[in-house]
Length: 219
Image (cartoon, rainbow, N blue to C red; front, side):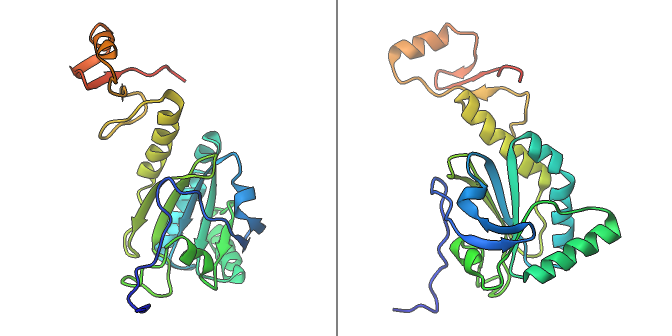
């Protein structure tokens, strides 16, 4: 078997998030226990003490209240030691006043990075790309984002995607292109002629019988 050119495996949307145990900046973690019954965003960064990663981690930290309000835990990761993580957290706090309160996984042996397909050999053999995994309270992966080493993530899109996932689940709807909170959602298409006729008599915004939008209740 040619193992040299094998494509790294990665979890897929709909899979249960692979479990692991690891040391983090907040102590030892068993992932499945830590994320139980909560939304979780697991995100990797290439290395500590690097400029783009510092802006990203600071962005997550500055939006900690937003994620708390949306019952979402944050978990970071890079292929660095726990000592490097602690030194970096301390350095950023001293220089900017921003504290990374969420756990950051020390993945020096790359075991978690490999488990989640965060290593992309065409990009780097030793640094995790900027992966983002959205995990629901049942432990299922619902959305995956990947960015290269030299392009930072879009925090507005991460927050929008989280709200969209939670909204779609709560109201049993789909969400259209560029949807943002407060806009109309798409109603699932009718499965019978009777449902089609009910839809045509409804107050939905009808583009056609298969594409109808409705306002969502105010939370």
